[in-house]
Length: 185
Image (cartoon, rainbow, N blue to C red; front, side, top):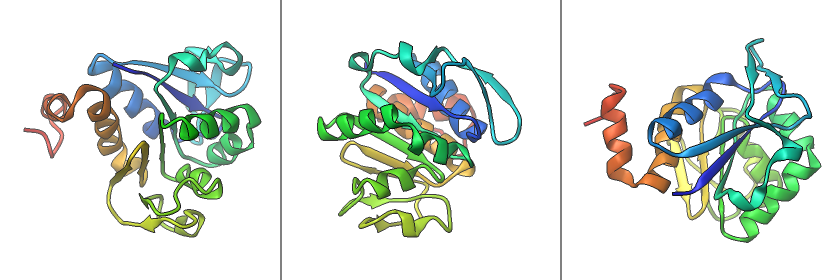
């Protein structure tokens, strides 16, 4: 099973971030919450302070199989402004490793040209940032090694899709049932 890194910036959407962390950990996956600053404490867009596992300079990117970008404002803009993180997103994409983004954060992939010719989704009103994508209204789109999702209301779908990549669809479906999710068996 792969190791995952999820990046938190000041102004992130806490439900999008923490739902992924929660479900992945429940599935037995290793996921690190990584602050893009040198401070472990990161404040969400709704003034919820979260303590991350690592700060960016402590992350060993050779250990990760996936990078996850939660949305929120100004969190998405803060993620996109971080040159080190953007270099890692480029490297992961180029090397066929998984990258995932939810809400406004798929716009980062759009600006980088990553979504050209791919199905993708994002927060309503941000579609013009998904440059070259086949934009859908689905809750989650998986296009090869790129995963996108629409927002807080699709955070469970997004997290289960990520879990499904590493644990298999059957385990993700079992988890959906265990958390009494509407699509659970």
